[in-house]
Length: 245
Image (cartoon, rainbow, N blue to C red; front, side):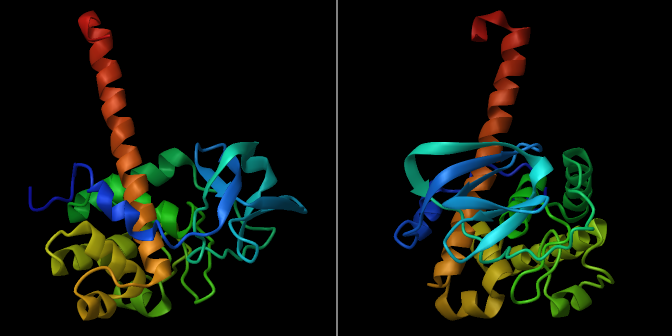
């Protein structure tokens, strides 16, 4: 195995504290989607056949109403998920989300090609676009892994809205960042968000609020996925060996 990439273990939880002091907005609702994803938000409102999910009073992401399973009021407000990278603009004619199976297959294929853990790629996708192929940020980043036009050209991506191309380009770029920072996931993820120049300048995760929240979010999601895998394996073993129950 070339790196920490594939089948990587948990990332140090301490990194997730990077954003602890920089998230004053508290989520009041938790929205659950059909694919199992969740969004914590301060409020939501209807917009035709879509719902605008606000993670603060100014930023929102639009989700198809049909994709929402439930909206729960949180008994205790929690830190809301940032959406700086996913201010989505989408027309009513956009196609539905990718199926979870199709997305996982694409991530697994790209991860195998670059020897990167597919769970890390999935965590980047969730932080960048929430799994929406047509996502466009305020700065012009596009698609599942939010490629800037210049990065897309460098990675030979002809159309950032084509999921397979976007994932291939994003994975190639993340591979370059992991190589540059010797498989330090926090630095590589920070460079994916803010650029390697900022990481080099500050010799680590730069003190940008958006970047620190982004790194924390990716690592939380990555650790959540690894926890789920461990629980699944334990449940499988428990079925085979009753004494483990």
